Image (cartoon, rainbow, N blue to C red; front, side, top):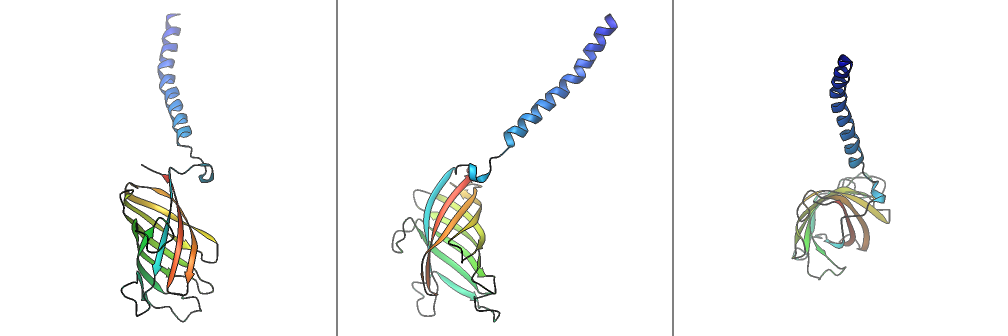
Length: 190
């Protein structure tokens, strides 16, 4: 009888840690299960307007972007053209409203048979409402009404933020001015 009790005790010392490990791993699996993006609410959301005035050779005082590599001769859709920008961001769609920050980066046209661009830029905030930066990149599929770019990080109020920026062309005035409405939805906020 005494030998049987010591065997049960030894077996419980072996099984108890195994049961604890199984319980902890199942809890961490459940805790790390993430909701699909469309079922998750953003932790921060706001709308800004991006104003781009391309330098046309005569308006250096008003220009906020410039072509630094000309388009190629492949197609009629600016394929290969690289534009660098330092564009004002406003809370409404008026170009002369006080900027809350600047969009600083570049885009280039990367499709031969229709307009399409690839953006990489940082929103640098300078308002009392927001401090810090948001880093954004992705394809601007121009023929679509709305397009999504990825928020891949940030600093300050947006430290390590992740999310989606849904852009929509709000106005287009020839090749020299366009305004984008940017619906910024952050899903990871720290």
